[in-house]
Length: 182
View (cartoon, rainbow, N blue to C red):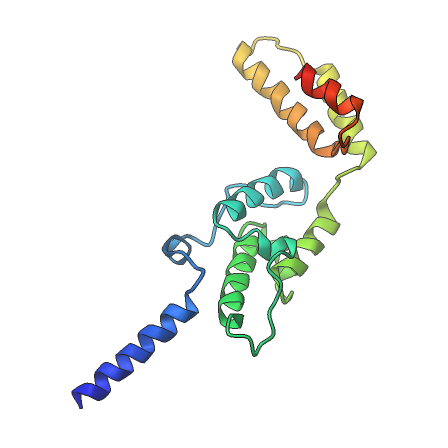
C-alpha cells in the first residue's frame, strides 16, 4: 500500500511539474492585476505600454505578438501553452474597466484579444492625435510649477509623440545624421 501511495504522489508531482513548465513561481503567486493603468477607452497608449512592459518582464510577450503560437492539442506542450495563454488573457481582462473587458471575454487566444483591442483603441498613425499632442506642446507653459514638473510634462508629451512616429530609416545618410546628432 505504501508503494501505491508513493507512486501516486510521484505521478501527481510529475503532472504538476509538466503542467507548470514555463510558468514561474512569481506568475503563479502574482496578482491578476498587472498594472495600475486600466484601459478606459481613452488611454490605450499608456495602458498598452504598461502591459507590454509587464509581459516582456514576465517572458509572456510571445502570447500576444504571435511568437508563441497555439500548438496542436495533441502536442505535449499544449497544456502549458493553454495555461500561459489563459493567464495572459486574465491579466489583460483584469487591466481594463469592466464595461470594456466584457467585450473581450470570449476570445480564444491572447493574441486574438490583443489584436482586437489594438484595432478598437489604437490611434497609432492617427493624424488628429499627433495634431492634438503638438498643440499641447505648443501651448504648454511652466507658469508656477517647478522646473522638474514642467520638464516631466514636456517629456511625457514628447514620448507620446514619439510613439506615433515609427521611423524606418535603414542605414541611409538621414539615419547617420540622426545618430550623430543624438
